[in-house]
Structure formats: structure tokens, C-alpha cells
Image (cartoon, rainbow, N blue to C red; front, side):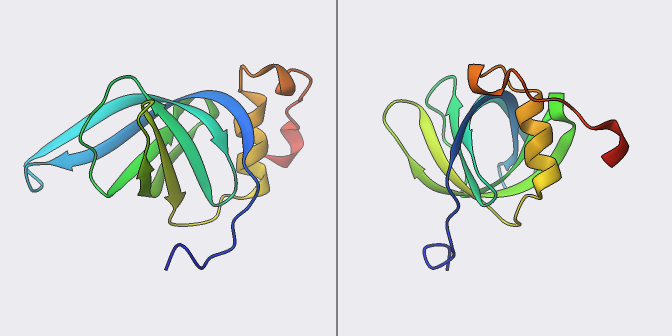
Length: 118
């Protein structure tokens, strides 16, 4: 299903993220820190700190941009501790702008937050 959807172009970014998932069949909620290194409306590339066993479905939070509970599906786990994920819903332009404003990537240093649009 996810291989037939349209793919949007990934744009480099650098945001802190948090992955939340259940372990041991809904008995334990686990969290892992990650870095969002590229993002688009339909997916992202995340860099985890160490090699972990992630489930196929989990939730991504981007706390500094105040975007919570983005449902994700694990597409591919690479050997350099990066993972490719697809979102269960498309991100809006406002959410992407908010992510880029709080990014520490040099390409986004001149972005401004429009307070009236929120």
C-alpha cells in the first residue's frame, strides 16, 4: 500500500524527536530519542542513537515544534542507525513550516514564525 502512494521530496532538517511504542504486547510503553534529519509531507528519515528493535508501527513526537503523535510505519532500517518511515497521515504545510522554524539546520536559519497564522 505505501509503495504506491505519492512520495514528496525530502528536505534536510535537524530536529530532536521522540519515538514511542509499546513493548511486550501492550504491557510496557517505551520511548527512544532520535533526530529527524530529513522530512517531507509523507515521510521522514530518523537517526536513532543506537541499534534498537523497533516495531513496524510507532508514534513520532517533535517536541520543540509542538507536534505530537504522528503515526509512523517503519519502511527500512539502515546499517548507519537511520530509519526510513512513512506517516499514516500527510503533514500540513503549517506543520512543516513549524518544524523548519525550530530546525538547527543551516538551510533554515532565516525562517520566521508567522504568529497570526497560529
